[in-house]
Length: 383
Image (cartoon, one colour):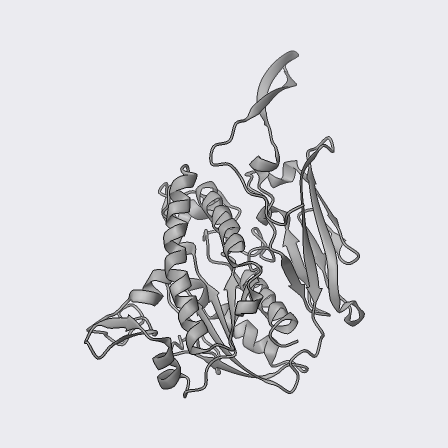
């Protein structure tokens, strides 16, 4: 079974009848009979964990449905515990290595609907100890908030980790001492590749991309080598993480999968330019594509932010399709130093968000994002 289950642009529903009783009268209602194509069970090829630290898969983040509680999720692995809304694992040191994971989705009667497989990779608890790590974090408002970069710093300061240097020109007020990054509210892959501001005002709202400079021809262009020379002391990063996609795709038409794909195609044009620029300027750097995070489970949170302009279900459909495309495009590219980080799985869509924000996590949610990146760091670049 493939880790990634694709879907047709147009779905044909079969209908079955369900009878229920109102005031002694049997009423017949039509309910859709779902299939694997409907649910679109989606998994990255590898998920990561660190001994003594919890990692989880939240069922709502796996499938495309407005009612995940109506399905049964069965996760088979020699580690972990299955709970009502998630599967969670806190590995022991002896569990270091790869563990097969199979996820099976059934309806309430136990009928098989979808199945997918992945690998749980448990890192050594002391991976990276004694090394040095130069980390550059690139992103949008989730990074600008500085909560998950702060948590990454805290985690990497614990015993058994490398000496960390966080690179970047942006140090917002909420960034802890030692935290820097390139995270800006509202930014997209395209803005990082093309944005040039001839008259910056010293704020992040009116500035050029940190990677775009005027060339000798007086025209702005992407120049990561110059960024490394001027902002990183000439010493390239060991790891660059990219957590983007929300602003790129949020306004796409959720009712038109082809339009969503067209938007994602445009996103990849700019993403690939930035990724390849880093590959050329820092050929030994590990480049991490963090999968775009899921929405808050509450429609009320979207109403608080966007009134009736955007809905939770609309963004859920776009985000799910984007994650599928990200996995499809960037999987199996480790030979190019490109990796996928499953930041979309270990984020609680209920308790990981405030009640009044559709896409920005709360403190718990940001810690979960950081935990996903930390586990990947320990299992891949630092192993």
